[in-house]
Length: 198
Image: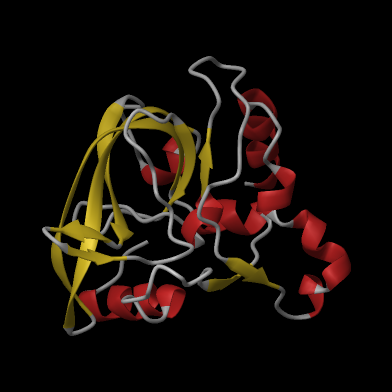
């Protein structure tokens, strides 16, 4: 999957709306995604641990924004054949919107906020300018409770406000969204679920 700069800018802005938001904001709004949708939109589904991050300014859709680049030590890429990833253990860089530069902070409610040292499962876009993005904002980020192969998934701390879309998004089907299906399950179960919907 590849984007030119204009397409990426439009894509990111459509997910986040206004980037400069007060701390009292509750969350951004996003369409709830089922596991199949998360997987189909992902180039990588990885288990990894953030090891470092840095914040800075980046030009996006004609404006300067604060973003955070997070280096993640990738343990396993469940879609290795899809991303042509020859090495399952390497470092990748993740771009998230918002962060702090000096005394200025930009907050994007609903954006994924990986923490250094917190092992997680990530659903990631293809690489653009050597960085990846989390699919569905924080819907594609699941912190793990341990470092072993039977670790349990948890919801991201910063989920956007999720809404249904179209006939398949009726209220009775919201329980099928990935954020309701995956938390509480262990890695081996989730890996099997991901492989079943590829």
